[in-house]
Image (cartoon, rainbow, N blue to C red; front, side):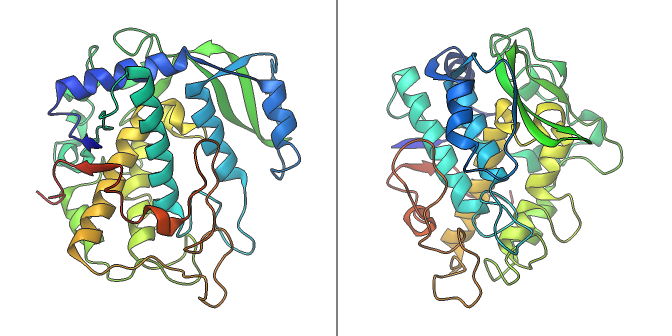
Length: 328
């Protein structure tokens, strides 16, 4: 069982994580873009793949494809998809992190490796102009916060899938030659910097996991932590917007910061679960509960056993956190 530790305080975990991310980007799945296209085109509404479909996807690309696909699967009648905007947000990403952790354990040869987390609320206490200057963004760590990450320990990571939007054809997935990830941390001056400890504390005061209409308009802990309420973008959403670049489109798992962000989101959820009687909602019997978000609905999966939200409520069979004092 892995222990997930603070990426800012554990150089060994940080180094192993970066090494593993680069290794996965250089490890072939054996699946070409054309094969993935043939598999998904009839299952995903509006699916479009453009570019060189003879490129073979890496394991790093595979997780970006998985996330992109889940976000393209709508929830009938809801402002939500099968990964975001609804109750499934927290359990689906718990599953997603768990599977990434498992393949990292394989490529690193360490069955006890735990994904590190980025306690972004601690960095949110810094002046906004200094939040991108922390050791997290060093050459030997996660690379530059702004521009192309093409040097340092993460410089060898290349991505081959990018979510795109065109006004004429809408959303599409582009497959291309490997390129470095890109960031624009702290350059969107239309909102404050990273979330703060006060933001985390406010989220923890929520007493109900979720509510009707079970989407981005719902009140409750999930939507507060996801960042659609009360003042969007908040919490998880704000971190994506703050980093910018490859953290912006549906292929945001291209950037290793994605997993550090979501690991902290999962940590906040786990802290709430341990300190309260928060119950996952909706249950299968909940009136008008959206299909795909109910407690025993199977979650979209490209790797490993199919799991439901209720399967992942207790993560202790797989991992634990070194510190659940998320407000300190």
